Amino acid sequence: MIRKSIITAVFSVFTLGAFASPAFASHCPLDVKKIQAAISTLDKSKMSMAKDAAAKGLALHKSGKHGEAIKVLHDALDRLGIKH
Image (cartoon, rainbow, N blue to C red; front, side):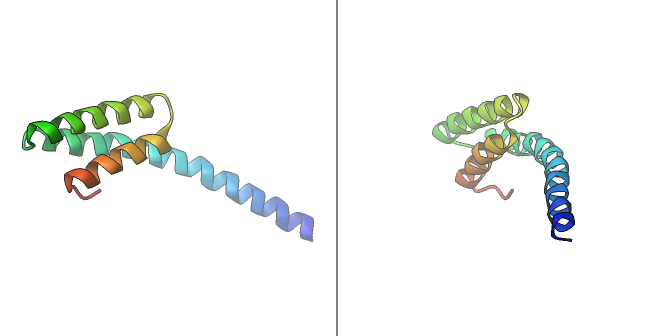
């Protein structure tokens, strides 16, 4: 009985992980688009930060590091005052 519960719990964790990764993956480009849309309205110092963050976030996304990409992009969105 306990063994069956453990197997079910492990299976559930792996299943959630499999479905969560694609969700993170599709979220990165949306954040990049939000940053790029705001770039034209920013002053030079924020514009530079925004461009760097968008490029870094997109590079992390393409290399499969979606968790890190989300952190970089959300930090930039917060600093720019954009809701994510």
